[in-house]
Length: 284
Image (tube, rainbow, N blue to C red; front, side, top):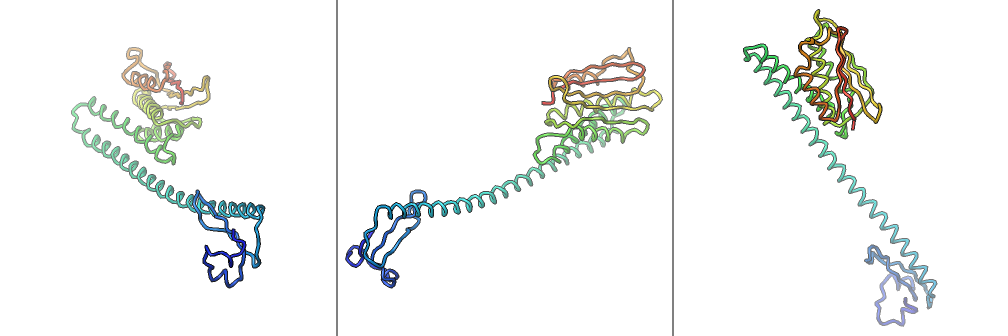
């Protein structure tokens, strides 16, 4: 604060101050993050002793100015951060898509190799084993495809996944109808894949062994929101039932093992009117 700059020997009068005939002046710093961004000044063309109230008022005005400037700086910084984050997210998404594409190619390569190796097996048992392996790999591949379609890449829509699996099975037969009746339910991939393999195993066994005359139907149903939050997956056919002399083959053992993997339990009923296999499991 200077009452009369003409009497002050400690300061050099700048040309703008002299041109405007400034005699008294008051400067306060505009502080941002503890540093002086600049100064706020009030001038008078007459000698003046600025009061304490004037000083407080100027300091308040400087503080308001500093806050406004800081806000603009923060907005600009945030905008730059958002832009950077967006670029990083885009790069991450491109990397994820590239990885998913490569994984899909690996699945196709494995399936192609199995197809080429199948004729080399001299027995029907060997060729059947190759077919089973290919079917299970295809079920996992379909789960991967469903996961790749979702932006969050965390969960699979079980209804869509089951429809994709049964569509693949239907393409192998012409006289067996497969229907899916499923609630909307999203599950993690580590739960979807075992369920897909279960459906693949049960449906494939049905159309290969359940229909003596080669015709019939298979129904895959999924219900959610049952007791204790459980869900139920059911595969039922209209075939002739399981041969009582061959109960619980390797297919059912695999189904039970897959169900145990996700904390589920399996129940199976079979008669001459058909076979019904249910898996009760916790979706989470």
